[in-house]
Image (cartoon, rainbow, N blue to C red; front, side):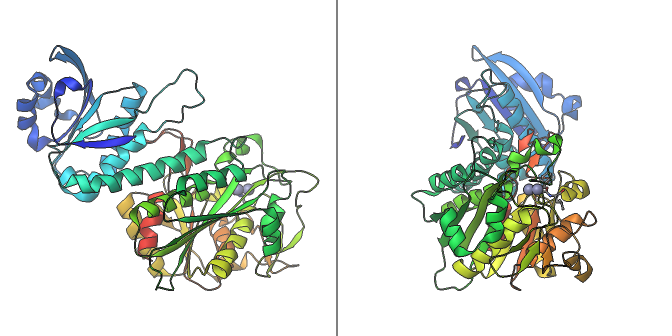
Length: 482
Ligand code: BES
Ligand code: ZN
Ligand code: ZN
């Protein structure tokens, strides 16, 4: 959806008008839209951020649908995201076309750059609808809409905001795509397509070369499936004279049946979304391609499917990872950490990654602990957590630090191998994170578990059920600040 910033407008041209203003500017609004005067009497100002006052009125000989949001002086960023998100959702549920979002009197909301970004991010998020398989569409997203802010400096910002919204949308589309249509090969194709003709170089490595590289953990997880695993590598060199390269490692299970440690049907139902980390990395690379910051980044995705067959790996197997550490398979459903481990090693050894951020739908325990509200973050270093917190506060992708110490790390010990892929139910997210950290070769490392936030079962003000695009914006802000 294209966001057009217009410098003037003719009301007649629009059937749908989103009118967002600050209550301190209500007199100006009444003068500009006299038809709204009776509805904006002082007592009706219970319509407050959270509530949208919807009116259908005739003026200019034409029917206009007004959607009015009146904010108090200094709204919280989350309230802005939610309000614009619900506006977007509402408009898309009504299949609205010819839309003007009038926010010239929104005060702090447009004068504060990050609030403005949050507002449009929310609006775009609300409009997203995964409707391509519905014959009778329940909601629609228009090709474009107009925004009026009365601030010409917004024009430059607009391209960046558009890129953020587009990258998030791409990630959501990838995650919502069902597993019958999106196997590792298709995921790789989508990454190549999204990054074609950009400054990001993409290389896709297939089964034979994965074997040659010695990525046995990835091959073992992929073993049960007919779908060929793919190692997707996305390189961006924005600061060639600098040795620092941030590795973004995304879990890319295009389906997770659990393998022989099979999941119950209910648990399997949404496992097409087990590539949410990979999709976030692809989205982040497209945003980096647009922003072209002065940093080096390599995105690495070890994509595969966790299935059952005569070729599948088994509980009790002992595997040798790409970096030589041996792993006892206690549970074939703890597959993500295995694929991430080899992807980390590949990023370090073959792509020169000096700093590592892995992002993954790794544990059900993260969902239990933090719900669909917060991503779980694991790192050894307070300073790195501070960086996550800083990025997270800016992008409104909430993160919560989980504890890590030697006892938690020790849960990954095995009696027969160097490591064990399932340290049990207790502290499941931290233990899983610590497992991935075993492959960081003592480099700065951050682990982000998005099992709860990447794909939601409960509707949020700005998000319908399904993919959220969590991580895209966060990863880029974080990578720029590593
Ligand atoms: N992909 C799942 C984690 C998951 C669960 C993501 C629910 C999103 C929603 C992961 O591969 C998994 O199955 N983890 C196991 C680990 C256990 C066997 C140690 C889990 O969380 O139960
Ligand atoms: Zn699993
Ligand atoms: Zn999984």
